[in-house]
Length: 193
Image 1 (tube, rainbow, N blue to C red):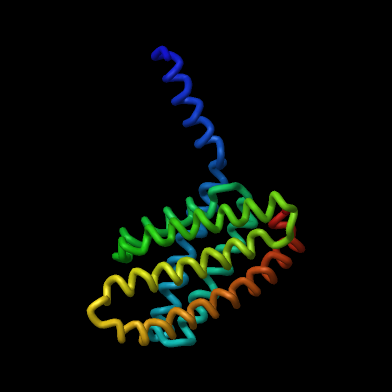
Image 2 (tube, rainbow, N blue to C red):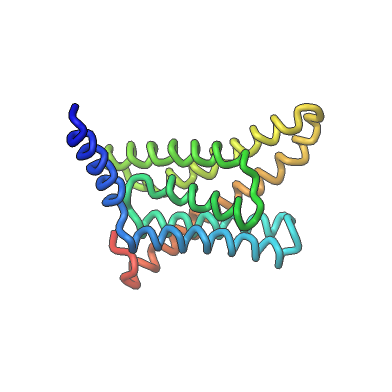
C-alpha cells in the first residue's frame, strides 16, 4: 500500500468513528454520566452513607438514568462510551477504584452485544435486557474484584454479598422506573423512538 492509501484508510476510520455520534448526542451522554455520578453521590451523602435505603435509591436512580439515556441516544457503543466517561469522572473527581473499570467495560461490551442480538431478532425490550445484563455483570465483576482483594479473609465476602444484592434489587426497581419514565417522556414528545 502506498502512503496515500494508508492515510486515506486512517482518515476514513476516524471519520467513521467521529461520525457515529453527533455533538448533541455526545453532550447528552456526558450530561447523563455527570448527572448519574452527582445524583448517586448526593443520595449517599444525604442518606447517611451506605445504608440499605440509600443503596436501593442510588442504584434505582442510576439505572433509571441509564435507561433514559439509551433511549435518547440509540446508537451502538453508547453504553461503552457512557461507561468510559463515567469511569473517568469517577476516577478523577471522586477517587474511584481503577480495578473496577475493566469489569464495567467488559459488562458494557457484553450488554451492547446482547442489545444488538435482541434488536436483530426483532424482540422487544432490548434496552431493558441490556441494562439489566450490564448491572448484573457489573455487580458480579465487583464481587470478583472484591474476592481477589480479600483472598486472605474470604469471610469478608459474607458482608459484601448483601450489599451487592440490595444494590441489584435497586437496579431492578430502576428498570421499572426507567420504563415508566420512558412512557412519560414519549408522551411529552422528548423521546421519539
